[in-house]
Image (cartoon, rainbow, N blue to C red):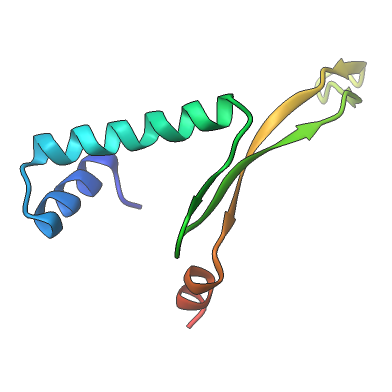
Length: 92
């Protein structure tokens, strides 16, 4: 697992910028993805994949502790679909 700090350090080294600048870029990147998904859009990144949302219908569920039936409200879920180049690289 790579932490955010490790990701910032790697981007900083690879791009030849300070860790502070790399951190600001990563923060901006994440905020931009959030904003796009909140607005109902998607984010497509070549050789990585697509972030988008999917609607989940309301449904009945069951409380595992009591067995009682409960209503689960409709919601949106964030999805990530991996690109073919990345999938192929991981499966080598």
